View (cartoon, one colour):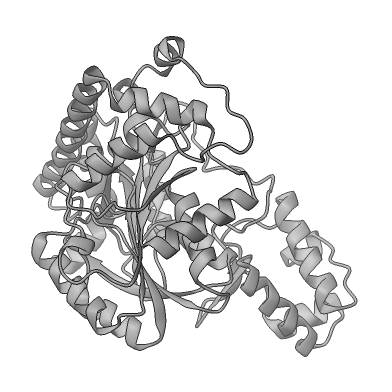
Length: 446
């Protein structure tokens, strides 16, 4: 019995088929990653022609609800843009959850105290969208990292920035070069906007220049690059790789470059920006989020970019929410101006690096290869993701399967968030991973 027989679809047209499948996603009857029947089987079960079903699935693909890949058929996307009742990754009682990508709450500043000390403004319609003092402080920080910051605006987080830049500069159907493995939420955002993904391979030094060149030659008109703390692999650009990527972009001067420094000062590595490594693209944007350093609930990021891009983002923002709350802006300004917070962020950066490197060392001791040059995550290549994740759950570890983080052709893996991982846990986890992967490791060595 197929899932469609358990969830009865009544559809007399392609549009009704689209509505019915979206309703199934919203109710939780269809879950991310779930495979759908073939076009002919689905047509027979629903009572529509294969042509009509194919048209409905094409519309669902355009909306980012389903994905179709060679030899994998059509399945529900990992993060379809529909509010749903689906459950998050299950965490059994007593298990250690290292799947969520969160920072360590103990290394975040005291927001309650900061709010009590803050003199919060009364914001009225028609005033400036951003606090000048916040922009000036952000400009100083970006310039210190050699990121051009003549034009700035304030947005509601890094993903909000990327969404607004894409909406301002691209059209549905445009192709975007993205890292693979890469950030699952970015994939979902691009699909929801009707954009096509061009996968670009990465190594420990970030996006590969020759792979980016190939993606742009295939027709990609934009590229999203993570300069450090890449999610999920922890890759970080060095000066040489940044220059190589800049040289590729110089060959394609109309490419929109988006640089996503989502971790900022807690990435645990120096920022090597493509924007300062050579000729600056004509269209570009760079995000600097406060989420990992100051707290995920501070939905704020600063966006730098060329004058046209920033003007378009501000204009669209004005047409929608109008501005980012100046209560949040004032709070971030106060935190950025506090020497004690600077010291805490520096300590967090060092602690995250120590925890990440400790797990890498323990894995190496067990003969397990892994990646994590920077950031809060370690990426462990595996032959079979679901089996490895399930086996580790039995040992008390909840890790993230790699499927949502990779496009077709990318190597399989599992992601470990190391932000709160203690030394004893690192040693025990490495041992358990080695046991789970032992058959694969033995086959490779033999």
